[in-house]
Length: 143
Image 1 (cartoon, helix red, strand yellow):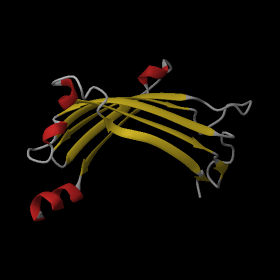
Image 2: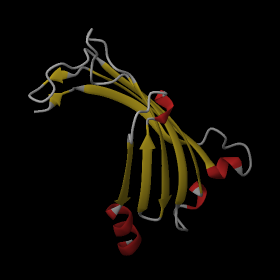
Image 3: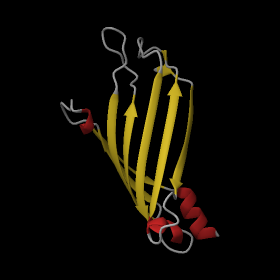
């Protein structure tokens, strides 16, 4: 294996904290995730951090109140702090920070992320993915 990491995590998704405020409660949601783990080295990564933690917070704008009777859409901006898997020459974890943007429409999601908030960006440390939610499509077509 590359490495092994048992972890525990907790969080909430699309919490309507501004629900009492007209209009904002219909279109604004917040999410958060916290994770703690204990990495163990493997064949590929022989020296890993003694522990790991991750915290992520996001704000989403979308038509949440109408997802059952209209096509759902969402724009979500997130910030992630990761203690890091890799270590420096002293064995200390190399912390990383990321910012990400997700665009969702119907069953499609386009998400992109970058570590530009690290202030140590030396190259194209960028990622993106496009996903299709088959469960959403099944629910819309057969129910």
